[in-house]
Length: 349
Ligand code: DAH
Image 1 (cartoon, rainbow, N blue to C red):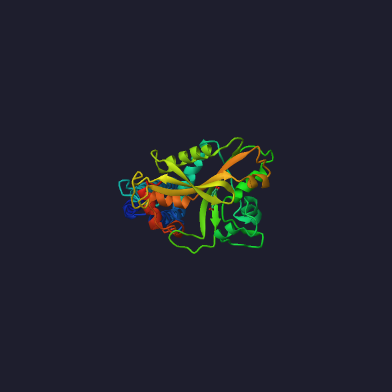
Image 2: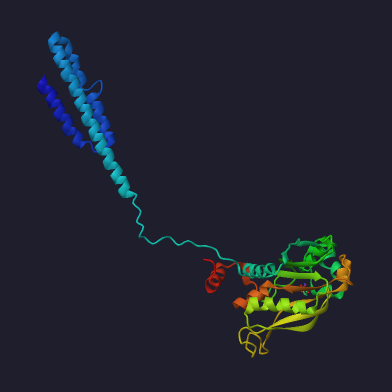
């Protein structure tokens, strides 16, 4: 009997080495320790033994069970450790491998210009305001000294929705809104960036939807010198410290006098080149002194208040600044253009 038990033990030790995973080990455990296993079979032989023999045999059998159990447990720990090491090895991350390229978007050139202009004007105490893109004829035209039938309306071919509603053709509409909304009828200093719409055929310099930044200052004793000083700061900030500006007479219904503003060419410094078409100056925006009719129609006393206004075209500024020659590039959102742009200008990649 003893030899049999010893034989069993050796058999288990042998087979344990062959159990190469936890599943096999479990099977082994049930084979040897289960109800139908050889150890159970041995215990069923106890019936034929004397009481003395039973005692001895029972103890030996229990010892054998304990031993087999301990051996299985040991092997289990070993197998678990091996499995853990295998997993760790498999999951090791090689931190020296080159990483996958992450594509990060950059700021759109128009947004860049708007951000820069906002930063400049807010630093001078201006508010940034907004107005609706679907606008009333009243604000887009009438309250800007452009009554129905006024010939200057023709230059802004409009998308009308009803007789009285249209997609705004100019952010100037927000001048009227801001004046009207100012219940104290006191000083105003604001800029308004936003989208505008006109029934133009799209080509390299025209787009049916584009962007404007309106500027409006109203206070007592505001003069054209204030306008010139302000726009000079703007020109230097956008096109370089050495820039100068000049005013040329022009016409806008909502300003009197009206002017067109040129900046000295930032490519040739004013001597004449292909960018400025040889004359040393580049037209950048329209401006003027707020027309008394506009002040009056929006609740301001033109005897007491004066003001200036200007309209910046961010597309034009971006085209000049970044050397872009087709306005459609801004809207088609071809990533090759946008990526190029961000690379050239050290975009926020
Ligand atoms: N609203 C004008 C346009 O769309 C631009 C403009 C010109 C705005 C002169 C102004 C201004 O505020 O004073 O062409």
